Image 1 (cartoon, rainbow, N blue to C red):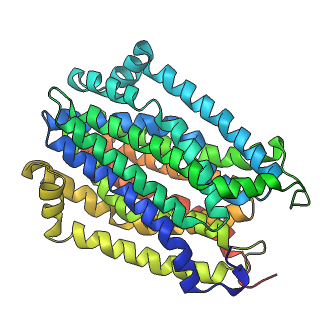
Image 2: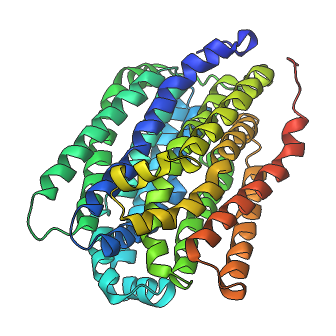
Amino acid sequence: MTDPTHLSLRRVFVFWLPLAFTWLMMATEGPFLAAVIARLAEPKYNLAAFGVAFSLALIVEAPIIMIMSAATALVRDRPSYLKMRTFTAVLNAAVTFAMVVLILPPVFNVVASGLIGLPPEVVNRTHLATLLLLPWPSAIGFRRFYQGVLIRHGLTRRVAYGTVVRLAAMAVTALLLFRLPQMEGCWVGAAALSAGVMLEAVVSRIMAHGTVRRLLEGSEPLDNEPLTYRSVTTFYYPLALTSLLTLGLHPVVTFFMGHSRASLESLAVMPVIGSLVFIFRAVGLAYQEVGIALMGDHCEGYATLRSFAALLGAAVVVGLALIAWTPLSSIWFERVSGLTPDLARFALTPTRILTIIPGLTVLLSFQRGILVSLKDTGRITWATAIEVVGAVSALVLGVFVLDGVGVVVAAVALVVGRLGANAFLVPAVSRVPRRPW
């Protein structure tokens, strides 16, 4: 691993680049699948159904998604590896059970028709798409655990290799199903996602084999206080709650858009907008594990990591602005994503509002990386709670009081919430020492 006492911007870049490439490759999934769905029958209904099914799968996988950060921070020796592996297996079983309950017809109908208010043309499509995503949460947990092990031991390139396999499997599955008659677009998207992530999970375990073998060959714990299930739970609980709150915001946003003005159009374009913004958010999301791995036991890498975060944040905001505020927007939404001209124009305003989000994501990843490395995960949960409360408050005001267009209100709400989270963490992070202790 890189020595944090001799950290340079170049070293941070070299460590971060494979992880950023990994996230960028994952970010292409959304635009690719949206483009496929948009070129099949009934694109408006199927884009809406795919967006809802994906949001539901995200909320189910929320408790497991931070396992990569936990593995990066905690897996140092044989005992910690075994504890974290068992902990991950239990969480995987729990999220799979939750997914099974969700897709039971009585439960799903209450959620889709009663809570979200989807039209009948979308409900049935969404149900089967959600069923096809059944393996998704546990496969995510399995592969993120082993990716965390790889990152902890400096093998970030292998994480990227696994994502290449994932994308290839997803693309092949989508293109094969695309040619089948009577295939709904949302089903194609869901099946492709599941196939890709399952294969990536298997490949991640294979690539981690050597590292796992070396961990298991050790006997004595490297930490003065060996990991216990209680300490793992204490450390991980705030992270799980954080991701639950964060990803839980997606179906909440979907709910409000379903009850807003221009609801169907909002539901249709939101996956396309989200996919575009996620491309620029992705490189910032990759920065959290960089901070955890390189910060050092006494925050020796703070100043260098902060400088890199500032440069990265500015770059991603400028990059998204070049699309959102120039004629490139029509090229992206119409030619690449396959939206009709009317839907492309409809997507423009919310995309411009969300231009700042990638920069705020870099800042949040930097802030979280510091706190996880210090094992102060509770503050992260409070920040996320503030983000959710701020976003929901803006959604209530915009949809039910001001009668705003759903996707525009959603964009404003997401920015308001994220600004609140960033602001809450500024004091805690600013007190971190600027030099080695």
